[in-house]
Each structure stands twice: as structure tokens, then as C-alpha cells.
Length: 285
Ligand code: SF4
Ligand code: SF4
Image: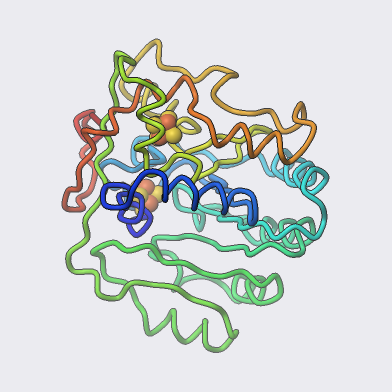
């Protein structure tokens, strides 16, 4: 997710109003959402904005996911051009990933569907994986990390199956966003949201609810790992897609600050060199 980390810092150089207008336009015209296929990861980056490096192993509830995307189709319409990112954690750790490809394509036929991976497990994927990517029109996005990948093996398969691949081979120096959580929740939510690179940009679908960002959706890994009380998101921090009556209601909700934004000291966010997590709270504070 490094490239997204960098793009999320654009708000530091582009006026807030321009970033906001762009995100609103995107949310209204090509609704984007991410799905945390695996909670955990096999790379474990410091400061992961999905908290996967400190998450206990776990996978999405596939039956719930199938129901949730059917509900989104009902609200947005069968032909709606969603942008769906199946990610993590590391999605290739999930042994039924191709089932998700199939059900996502079947349910959301006009969606752009991308699997976002760190690439480590790509070369060892079986034929079934590559066939499913082809048959379900799944794009492959290898995020930028300073690790060695067997690109010859990856190229061989993506060329053989005619797949769309995005990757970053020039990866010797990778910088990462260092988000700063305020454990006291003393920040101004409006201000945090306005300045936040993830707000109304990284919508996350989880167990029947949509969140405006990955942080609020997955912060339970952070609070569990470090035994923090009082930071749990409430029902006001996400929207129940079964209670929502229309796509407009969902889009409207995701455009607004949530109470949880008070836990993000966005102005203190910086960029740091990528490194593996040592499981220290300082990586997120
Ligand atoms: S590769 Fe790093 S940033 Fe991406 S999900 Fe894994 S731990 Fe998080
Ligand atoms: S909770 Fe608010 S401020 Fe924090 S990452 Fe999410 S949108 Fe940004």
C-alpha cells in the first residue's frame, strides 16, 4: 500500500478544497471500496494503516461478504461501475481467494476489481489462480516495498494469461506514511478529517458496514495488540448498509467526519523510510 500512502500525503501540497472536490466526485461517480480479505500479513510493515502487522491471523467471513456486495448492488444498481480492491493484510494468504474473485465479478459485473498484494506469494500461485484472474477480469496490483520479487515468474504468468499488472520495480527506497494516533482522542474531528489523506478515500467494507477509511475499520487490531481501552469505534463511525436506504445516503455519510477522527493527529503525520514492524506502539503514535 506504499503508493497509496504517498498519494495520501498529496493534501499537504494541494489545497484541501481541491482534494475534497476530487474525492467527492470519485465517491459519487465510481464508488470505491476496499475489502480486508486477510487481517494479517506476511510482510508486517511498521505503521500499516490496516494494522495487519499486529493483527491476529484471520480472514473475512465469505458468506457475509457475498451478502454485503449483493446489498451494494441493490443500492447502487447492477450496472454501477464500482472500484473494488481485495486486499489485506495479504489477500494471497486466503486459500479461497478465487471464490471471492468469482462472486465479486458475478455480483458486480461492471466493477473494476483489483487484488492488491505485496507479491511475495504470487510466483507460487497455481494455474487456478491465474485462470480465475483471467476469467473474472481481475487486475493485479503489487504494492511498492523494498523487497525482492521473482518478476520473471510473475511476468510469465501475467503475459500467458493476458492479465493487467501494476507494479513498482524501482523499489530500492520506499517511504511510508507514519500516521499518529492520539490515544486521548483530543483532536478536532473536523480538522483531522479535512486534512486526512484516507478520509472519504479508502472506504472499507466490513461485516455489513462501510467505513470512510481503513483506520476506523481495523483499529481493533491496534487496541487489542496494545491493550488500549476507550478507542473502540461506535455505530456512529460507520454506516450499516442494510439500514441505509440509498446510495446517496451512504455517499453522504462517508463524506463527513466521524467521531473517531478525534483519535487521529493528522497534522503530526510524517513520512518515514519503510521498515518491518517490531510490534512497537511508536510505529502508530
Ligand atoms: S504489506 Fe505491509 S502495508 Fe501492506 S498489508 Fe502487509 S503489513 Fe500492511
Ligand atoms: S478516522 Fe478520520 S482522521 Fe482518522 S484516518 Fe479515518 S478519516 Fe482520517
